[in-house]
Image (cartoon, rainbow, N blue to C red):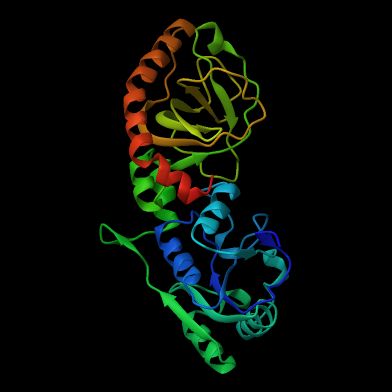
Length: 314
């Protein structure tokens, strides 16, 4: 059976419920508690990446699907059942528990956060969940929010930090750095002329775009981290297309990476995106940014690289 599956379990299950946008530290507490259920196969019920509950629509997403589901797997989840929201949105709360959780997923214990909503028009919360679980003879566990600096960790806080360029705050709240992981596409190859080749990755429109500017970054290629420096923005000195993209100069590797999905982790903000008088001035500044970023990136790779790979399952 595939990890993300439309099949139903053959064994009794513990089921974690949620959208899990960002799969942050609070979400992972729900996932790990689910995975620790003795004698039950740990599953997640969420929604297809192509659909979101009405209350979540319009919110920019935080992580690529590869990262989201990789974290779920690393937390010990066996399988993910992720139907389209439209397939279940008409169910009452009781129908969802009876027909989906128990009838299809063989759920014996439910795990969710204290703010979880379900049922038609999100009409039910944990009070109703407890009532339905008791009615149908299954257990439940409601997990309190995880707090940082006196405030609950949330996807909203992480989005706000990314939009400000505060990547250290993003990593603190999420437990891993902001990641760009789109396919490398051909650019102008202008950097090669200045011995500063870059990879170009378009930013997804439905995902958070961090504050425009230059970042210390770490790029993960073929099982190894490389220090790098990344510009998020529209490259105003060399382009008038006004299309946001990530352009990364990777230190220690110089080969064709076109077509590959390279995870680029943004570690810290360096400076605002700038307009330079000419290309020579631009690439002189890129060389300086690269030099300043390398030591910081190498320190992050040494201290946090391995745990990030393990958490994200890459």
